[in-house]
Image 1: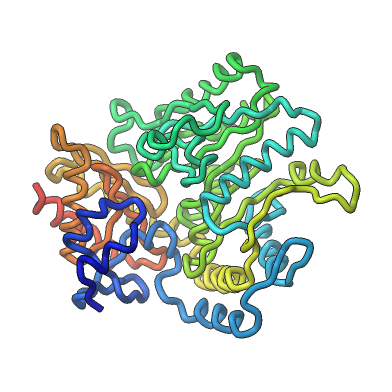
Image 2 (image 1 turned 60 degrees about the vertical axis):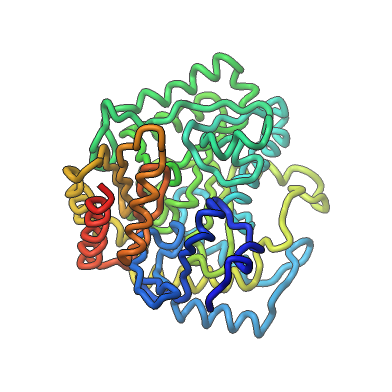
Length: 438
């Protein structure tokens, strides 16, 4: 289907230079396995798992069947004072995958909603325990926590914040951990930077712990251009949060469901958060869904009132949607059957070597990797930040490779089904694109 320029105008595209795109659209019309197909018939190797979300590869028939069957049986059921069996079945299976006592699951429709739910749970938890003064949140510079007002308030990406006023009050930010003076071309977790977690102590001294509800971080920052945490950084955050009675929230919307070689980054780093947000890979992106995992002690705080009282005044029309639950259950079956939750660990060394083979290419100034993720940072053109990254992104697409641009950093995070041969193909096409743009 070919659309005229006028027909393209009705859709206001998210996070897109709309005029630029609509002057020369890039249209995808089909997907299967590791590939998309463009509207001009070209096969495109997917190096980004869609948007960090199609972990099991595209168009899985098992998920399609589950969705189709559920649609024909019951397309919707309310979960306010009513329910249906699937969200309970799914929550029990998710809890078994999660680390520690993250045994409770609150559903929503996206990562943004999962983050806002986590923030509200944190506030309500402290209030239920008689510490209603704990209302401040601590985020981190360069962080991405979705696009709700809560998420952009604790997030640290300037363009996501500057357009929207004062945002939530009472939010501070830890310094980011990207330091190219010390960690340029580090492989995996960089050695330098764990001490940056101690900035939390300074914020505690400034505000007093009695006023701080939670710290929220991505275990590995993705959207800003792939920033693995320094060795020991997350453990130090956990220690400080425990010391001061502050909840620790992990945003695992990107890292959840096998991206680093464990079901969740919390297991990879051996750090247990109090709350954990997920989305994207929970349904292999076939149906929108998100969730917030909650530890036992946090959930228990909400059960102190009368049995007939609503314990948490929050939720969404589509929380625990039956079709989304069916998709998620089928997705978990695939992850378990095919070993995809640990496959990134099996491929990590090969992936790392392939990523760092780009080190001597023109304008490559840093490479960061962890699990089955890599960020290749390119030197910015003076006065034109982001232009070189965009040109490489376009050249890749024209050459049959889909990558994700974040300014002048190109992020790579393919479906977890990728083969070593396809890793070679991916980095070969990517290297050619960097040379062509140079």
